[in-house]
Image 1 (tube, protein in one colour):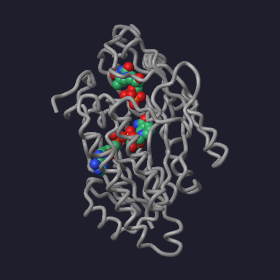
Image 2 (image 1 turned 120 degrees about the vertical axis):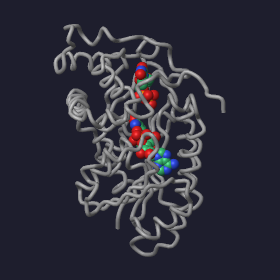
Image 3 (image 1 turned 60 degrees about the vertical axis):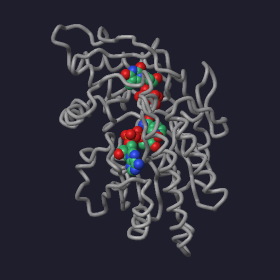
Length: 353
Ligand code: NAD
Ligand code: TYD
């Protein structure tokens, strides 16, 4: 029986699909292919005998019914989402539709399917809802988010993810659907859409563009290499307890300025500028993001103590691999940047609804 992955053509989803196939699982990938969905990220597994791709929207109840009936998944991993804070500031509607309404549709379809199962298939069925640490709001200089931190989302993105998390919890408590939820910190790695900080800076530097740092560059994120997140999802799916929430983090706090400087210094060595100057000169402090959360940091002791997971990648190795991937996959990036997104600034104001 396959695992149904929603949003499998996105950044984390495509890494997860490859991760699961490499470990012997069968995977059905249901993805709408929004601007962020990219089948080029899955080219290496396109014809894999244990892989199927279905283009579709998680809000399409009839499609979901037929996918569950035809593929009889043993589990669902829900990654389909609108995922970028800056876009959510300009145009929150799609975030409400996919992240909240879509999660509702998926939970409801999964419940109908689950209720029709019997025996071992029913006992083993799980739905893992993949969420973010951003639902907890913003930390001051000290402390950590954990599973018991009260929700306090600040952006339309995090508010829509918080809404989805509450629905996931309710479908477990009210209807008995075996739901698990993970709240993970900022991921980086291959195949991340270049609107996000790390690929944005790598590709902007390689194109000799300015490197726009929001505000004073002191905002802090807890970075995790995407493969560590994929392994955490797999561990939670196989060994986590239904109804439980697991916070996942990289134990790697960096300010945005530290990240950008790291990328500049790495590229100074790998791909020196023609004029011999450092990429650091391209750093430009720009107007801050509205509602910009200051600091995220995760206490991941629950998943470590109960399920034995901890991050395996250190930041330097993960970044080396990521920077190398973007340099070696120019075509992947070019195809994106020839489309509707060209590294321009977003998230400074609300579009007229
Ligand atoms: P992404 O934007 O790269 O990919 C999202 C994918 O979902 C795309 O392939 C898109 O086509 C698909 N999608 C969007 N709307 C859909 C719909 N209505 N129906 C079906 N498919 C749809 O996002 P990502 O960074 O890979 O994040 C994946 C998940 O992980 C999201 O739920 C996100 O909230 C969560 N998450 C991300 C991070 C991070 O740092 N990127 C951290 C923690 C949690
Ligand atoms: P982002 O990758 O958008 O992730 P999130 O907002 O979900 O944490 O941004 C990470 C951090 O980098 C965030 O503090 C905003 C900042 N940032 C910049 O300073 N410049 C940029 O060009 C981008 C895209 C982000």
